[in-house]
Image (cartoon, rainbow, N blue to C red; front, side, top):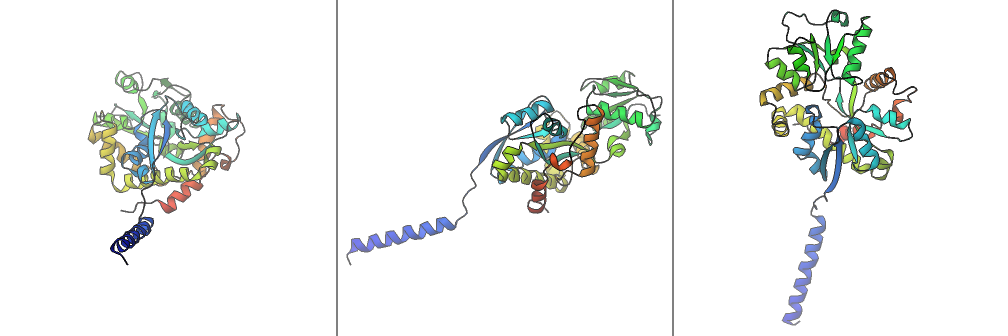
Length: 332
């Protein structure tokens, strides 16, 4: 055998060996770019931001672009049009849309509880332990027909009281409290923790009044879920990992949120994240619970947006959340 032939045989053997080794070696997951729409940047959407910035979506082969639409209805419109694959917003918009001939599905719970607290700067005011204790108090909320206004009105009515509510735009509740226009202000985090740092106090939590409540979910169209179910699996997997990370590593999650919300002081962000986690506003898993869904739908019936809703399974597909709960957990 000539030296040249021997050399060619060795080279061929090396190529074959390299080919088989390459086939066995884990290949990098191709990155897919997707868009998730939201109404705006809200601290309560922490699971979305942590999943993005901590790299959990990236681990699932996703490059997520988060876009703000300016409203829940615009977020759902972005999903319907295909300009976003998923939307973060009020889950009942899917039910309303379904009855208008544009079906949708909620595949995950992002905020599972009414994230409003009644705060006051009046240190002499007693804690509201029963809705009837609202008698004689004026409450400031975001304008009707917001969820804050509607639930506060319901709280008055359920207690047999005439609602005494003054409406204020987002960012004006503090001023209404300071100037004495209202006795109690209904606020979100991190504004609640900011108020507490300025000597306000909490007199009631809407979470205590209404319990589990499907107030924010992840939406998609049935057609998109059918055409690419693995995409929904990857997204819910990243979000479930985010929920676990927030619970197990709150300090690291706070570092991410501090970068997202530099205007919020770190100590305020820490107090806010602790409150929404401890009270279950940010859930442990992504599943949409039946009682939480029914309360949200009942609210839509009260305001006249939905007359004859279908069963929850017509609007909610929990299969992806269940899969993520079984396959995508962080334990340490």
